[in-house]
Length: 203
Image 1: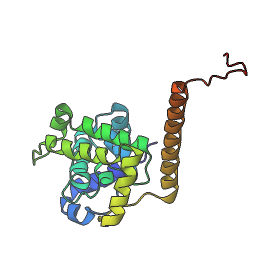
Image 2: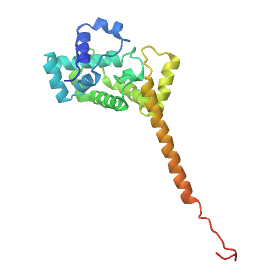
Image 3: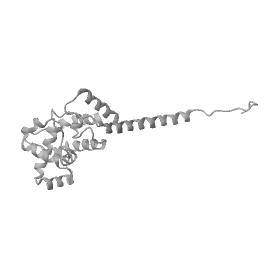
Image 4: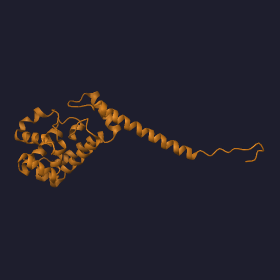
């Protein structure tokens, strides 16, 4: 079973919108991938969410959309990890998965079904999601971004754990080593073979 904590938090938030400000910088709940799958219209995830929460499809869609708009993309949304509904410790594959789900959520057909009374035009969020993904889409960019978070002390920022940093460093080292090996191979191919002559001067 998927982790329902984020969806439960979304239902709670939409039931009491006044809590948006006090929860703006709180850590995101577990199960954000599940929430984003529901938001993006994944039928399997939606069916499971309906079974777990015993709410209507309309209630769920409105709740997860409101949660994304307020907790991820609102003015107090925080850093790029949060915009993607993730934490600094999360795997690269999860960040990419969340980016794809968020972009699907922005699709006009899905947005029209989930739009609330405020009639928010979700197209305004596309740039924020793209910019957030641009910050962390490669190991080098992600490492630079983590350093910036630590340097600026952004509220709600969570610098990646030591283990994750070690893993990123190892990947960068392996990549550099591979490039050096490839460069060495190309250089050896360009180097002319040595020609040796006998004592007689003849080849």
